[in-house]
Image (tube, rainbow, N blue to C red):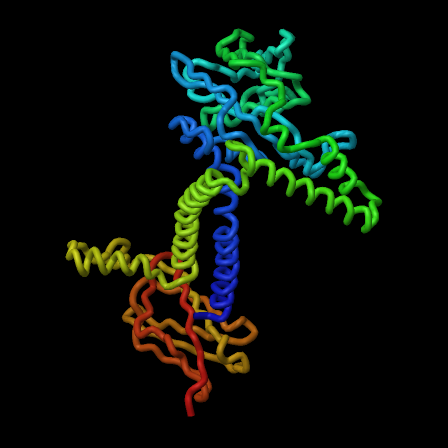
Length: 425
């Protein structure tokens, strides 16, 4: 193998294997973060396993018994839980809740209604959630979350389109309380309705476990504020740690109130997500490595794949096949070909002499004079056919290693490369 080919092969495999290693390390995490959880949630909701659905929404804590659980006569339903969520926006604008802040909300899902609840429209989409409070006031909350055509207006709900469920999040900052829910479709018509057994007012033993969330959020904002001294940050972090401990202790004492990260349900759901993410990633990685080997074998290697199939089909399976007829039998010998011989001097870069190579046949001689000034390449116009009796005139310290015994001239252009090495003393 030429040194240039060896170099290309090494570079190819270093580059492609490097990408493969990156895929191996990152793909499971990507699937576990962006694709698999939604599929696990959809399956859990379909089976009535609402706790698995809510833990994968990753609240800080939640109450295991839903405060609203309604099933529709046509199928599907609505479920809501008491939850406390965390703000994950690291680039929050000034005045917005800081990253790490907490907020009370009712979190849940609408599921199993894709056969009759149409929410996609590019024009005048009337899809919304109408919340009626305990005082009878109706508040409209948005449900649409993606813009398909880039016109600046949301057209649909991404989890509903991809996985058949809608994530609901009704924050304390949105409404003072919740009595009933009404869902309008793209035309603004009410399609789904559900009413709570009582008024949901963001006050319960679960929410009490979180104490003064407002004070905690002020500490978070102060820690994130630029210019805070190390001493101030240390004191604020101590307050945060004390708050977290008090919440953890309170949730542990209140039956049915759960700190999500330490719950058995979250552990089981995370294990399921990880397993399915690996199941998706491993075949992709295997196919990637197989593909780069196949490409290398065809472009840079020795065509072992083709040789294997030839051996298997014609050697093992004994499939009959006809040997290819020589091209001269098809075209005859009544044409001429431009024949080029080139010397490969990669192993003897010090060689500077002249070389003459000669072949003969019944139609005449083929003589190639290979000189340094011509890059050790010579082209001769020869009549098609087979030329024999090779002769090479070269410095006796050097010799060819692959000078063909028969020079087959076929087609309208023939190229041959002859490797030169130093003779062993």
